[in-house]
Image (cartoon, rainbow, N blue to C red; front, side, top):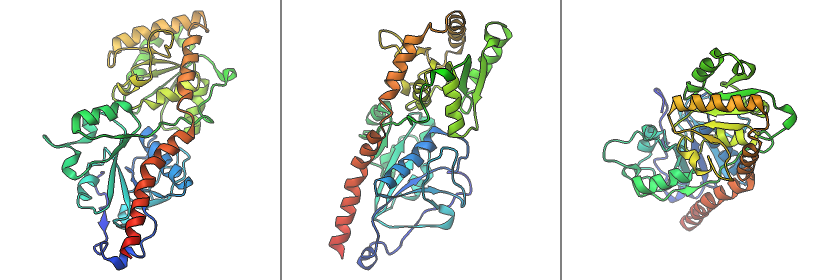
Length: 350
């Protein structure tokens, strides 16, 4: 957590029957960093809370300092703030992102259920002391959107994580062919390699200076999606991604994706054969990416339909992640039994 963050205050009398008798339905509390910039992980946390609330669960986003909350993604979620020292009941279910190790430690003695949501496979984000796993702070239940992270956790920690379906909004991320123009989009928050490639290729002159190059940074979700709907090419340069969801969003908008899988994207990104849906380059090989991007742009300039079949395969790939019911039902499968168990325990203690 960030410096100066609040701490979690547990109800000292939470195990007394008289208190449990008046405990409301189990709350599902998603802890979230106070991070204002657009982030796929934070969008996921808010969307999960919104989705759970729509299904009737008592779900909340938990931030650090009031009145901080995130609005750029358009997902509405009720909020609590650690700065107000909210009390936790043993009936609550805490969901903690893998980056918030301090919260894991602070809640090690929490009497209720704790779940880690793992959105990145990168060990640098997990911040584990040498020789320790999440089990050392009492974490045995994990959810993730990524099959790669699921396998990685089984190998590295002996924890069987539950998959939650990924979701790409089909209203925002769609393919309006009439909106397309020679435009290249790329992210800059984690890596500036694409911005460097922009400079290198534009210095070569035509045809590269005939493309509009657009960095996707500090945009609302609507503006971010609008740019992808207009773009011909999406360049992905992040090398540590859980699902590389931005690639799915670009595919859903009919962009030709060029770049790295980020490891996690290898679950669905195909570089050859009849199902090829992108132009992949070895993760981190920036010289190869530059040369491949040059080749792609020259071909597109000569023939705008040169990669049409790959783009169509990308659209088909993205559609598999655009059913909101899949995400909702996978969340229900995790939380409904826990809420029902807590309700049963509360009834027995009255």
